[in-house]
Image (tube, rainbow, N blue to C red; front, top):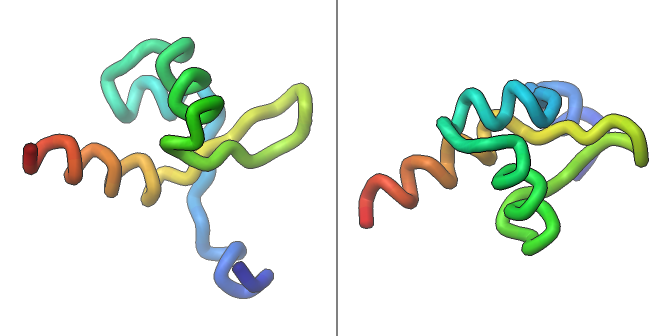
Length: 63
């Protein structure tokens, strides 16, 4: 991903990612460790891309 593409991304911390998906923070961390979603940020600050989370949600809803 280029810097230009990265600039438009909306990233949120674990707590807000969990709230957006209707799951626990532990579930968000588990999904990241299983590479179901991409984890961004440093060792002390995980962030997740809202668009990626919403795509996952839509994919799961269509099942």
